[in-house]
Length: 103
Image 1: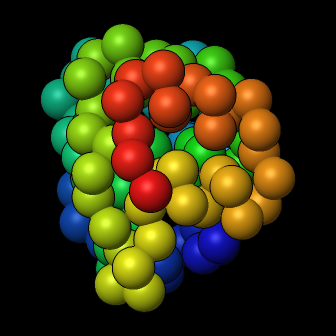
Image 2: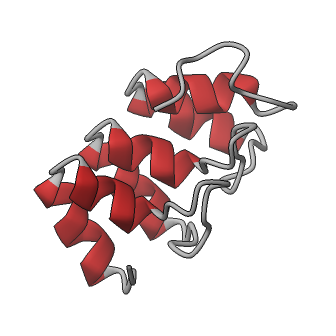
């Protein structure tokens, strides 16, 4: 997974960084301030993909409750579900499948 810093592009830098770091409180605050829940890194990882990769179950649930799409694909062809399966983030896999995510 991409590290914080240059991997994060645009006005949603702080939001994506908070997700990467697993800071649910900060991510939620930034959403309330207008951060885009579908924000993505330069390589196409959405905030949901970043949360899934980091095994951040609370953030993943927050995003799913706020209707984050499970469909986006990174430039390398990875969805949040595919990332979670590959990294053996089984609790996240369950969350994503319950939300209707497909491989």
